Image 1 (cartoon, rainbow, N blue to C red):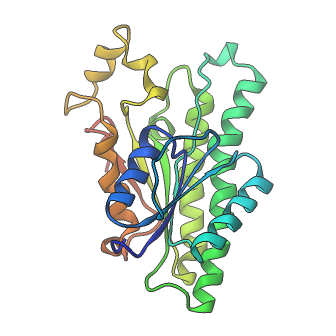
Image 2: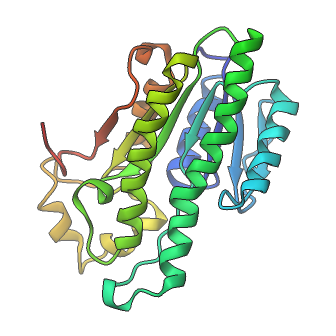
Length: 248
């Protein structure tokens, strides 16, 4: 996105991948609406609006988007990053563990995409903004190749990829691009369990580049898909995983 001009809304912005993206956008001079269900210390900036929101609640999402619009006047880019994990083997997973992950990771992504997308269409009709809006949904290799002990997470992320493709087809005529980024194992709190000594070597043997991703590794691909450099890219899922999942 053009430095200093874009308004970017990032969900799950308090830590991990979302925090890294929000910090990078702020450093580039953009305005950032940092959304999370928990408060966080982002420091002081007149280009930052931190908002508390549970993305699984469509009414809370609608109110959050209205607050963002009241502050910035428009939303140029959305990073749908909010997500949780509730690991359990299939035969032991409870209905609550299944539902909670689907509600946040998949339904939450839909609620935010719908609310922000509506605002983007209205802005396009009103001639607000200097460039085409874009949405990036954060997916996962768990949604492309499956994962042991997280069928809820894998199903949700597969759904995010489907959501991305459908939204891209519907909204291309409105000038809105929708893409996804599929990560492998990123060194965040959510992946702490699989980066322990018990599982570490098993995963690293499957990654040709031989290391886990750091949050900084995933920022540039996301910001690229939001930028005008990706103006003719929509409906795609970009793998950023060190070769963990390679396919045609």
